Amino acid sequence: MLDLISMRADLAASYDLSPSVAKAENNKDIYAKMDRVVPPEDWAMFAPYVEAINKLKKERNAVILAHNYMTPEIYHGIADFVGDSLQLAIKATEVEADVIVQCGVHFMAETSKILSPDKIVLMPDMEAGCSLAESITAEGVEEMRAKYPGAPVVSYVNTTAEVKAASDICCTSANAVQIVDAMESDTVIMTPDQFLAQNVANESTKNVVFWPGSCIVHELYTAEDLRAYRDFDPEVKIIAHPECTPDVVAEADFTGSTSGIVGWIHEHKPAKAMLVTECSMASNIADELPEVEFAKPCNMCPYMKKITLEKILYSLHTMSGAVEVDPSVAEKARLSVERMIDLSRKLGL
Image (cartoon, rainbow, N blue to C red; front, side, top):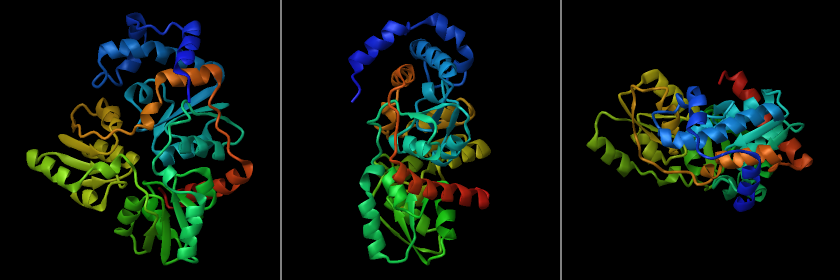
């Protein structure tokens, strides 16, 4: 666990991080990307951190990979690349920097390290976990194999390196249907998200069997809530993530991965949209689409929100939070992830 008192004392000795109107003005081009959702007063607090991080990135030859669920000051202020799990996994193999700072949750940093073993991968807070990743172990994968002999195991990237190593191939919410359909067996095991698996089964010809895990954010939404919201505002377009229950997905106007959601909103530009996913998604695309009014049902991921500007700066400043993966585990896990990336490219995803 990070010692926040010591961390803040260390940072204060090296940087002037007090709120600054001058630094806010100096970085107004960055602020323009988020000024619809971040008040000027907050930007004056964020700007010193953003300025320090962006300077330190150059000194360390570092890049920041940020998931779509990061808060706007991270997503717009310091990220070099943003995206969903698949996009960030691919980008980890392409960047030429010496250091990757992973702004997301721990399994994402593990995936970057698996794919780029020679790079330093920093995790600003090692306690930024994932309810899905924690719901299954490699032993759980073997239990499913014993129950369904010969069936291939397709594991969501929201898993530990050990689970990836025990699987045949990985998938993301963006490519899950296509990955499952590409398996040669009639029966396919999916782990660990039961609702993603059920939604995939509704679109696939395969017999999809699954591990009973779920996301603490997406499982909270209900079809009743969505129907009530639509009754209240019939004009709203409801866009859901496939980690939601099948009943919720059935109520939605569109279902897709985080990148799919962003693409759909950009293409269709509805007057009103409700994103049935993690809180920060709407905030991060609001400034790109001023013509869209975003409704704000909000279930926040407590793990994603552990990543802050302060922790990112400290991680880069001290080069702490380096993620390591046992080489024997990493080699097998890399095969599962690379199979996913290669198959996704082959399928044109």
